[in-house]
Length: 453
Image 1 (cartoon, rainbow, N blue to C red):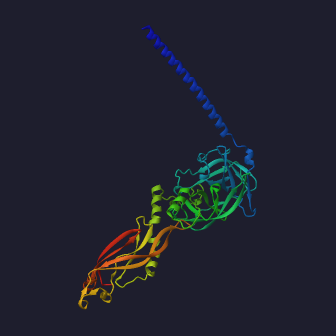
Image 2: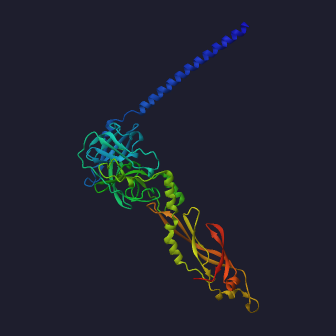
Image 3: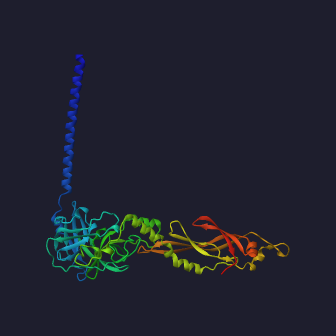
């Protein structure tokens, strides 16, 4: 009995010592991890020297043509430098694209003096004071954004003529002057002039249906991730600001679907100054135009409708092709039709229901037999060939749908009918066999008569 008690006591002491050792070991490990983490955090959050900010320059390639209101924004985010373009809109106020700033900077009333600095062409560098307004968009898709602006004030006024805010909106297929920055490794950035063309009702943003839509799409210009915030100007009026480039997934999708006819075309989301309540609070704000109904489902529906409105897109080509066809009318007068595939983005030409039996008295002799040709065949199979035309919905360089015609080799149609009924009874059933979208197809039409009115 005493031996058992002794064993139990020794076992309890051993377990206690083991637990104490584990606790001490874990404590030291936790302490070491915390110390390492703190050390790494101190290194990563070490402030960038103000000397680096002072080395930043904005150079104009032509001193007589570059706008003074354009500024280079130097942003310090987690010990990293980032650049945006900004536009001076008052003596101490600058506007840029909200999506160019880290999300944690997009907070109204945030003190930004240690976060953002503005560099001007005259060599002056002025710190940001406070974020006055920010659009904080939650959707990843810019077509669903209401706007994409950040406005902040500076620590002091600058003696520079500011840009004026346009309330006219962004016009369809209109060229706007864009000013962008090209950044070097030595802190020097150069101003370049470019042109951007706006596109309404396009596949990327079908919500952009008028001059006063909040977000638009631009093309025919060379912008990139380092030029966010670049202004689109009409004279001295700021009409829009470059927000983001079209996403890589959309580029891949358009290429995969074969929707584009132009190669290496780039597209950019532009936010419209006419639709900003903050920028236009002292003017009449046309909210009914600037606030369309937005949702992901509605965006998908509009994009599908844009490609699926085939009757309108292909109407002119369908009419032109029908008029150009010179079909054989020895047995029947044919009705040519274009049939859509299930997705309704492709049309293929096909023979539809014949209009009528064409003058059977002129060809019935081919089917007579017997004494004095009194016997007439009750079955015939003939072949009719017509050119193959396929109409596909494509997107032009503005991402707007248009009808593309692809002409192929001639396609054979096999026609079965009853010559006796066609001639004697002046009516016959007709069966047409061919291929459509690569698959076999057969259609039967009843009671085709000789009435060709």
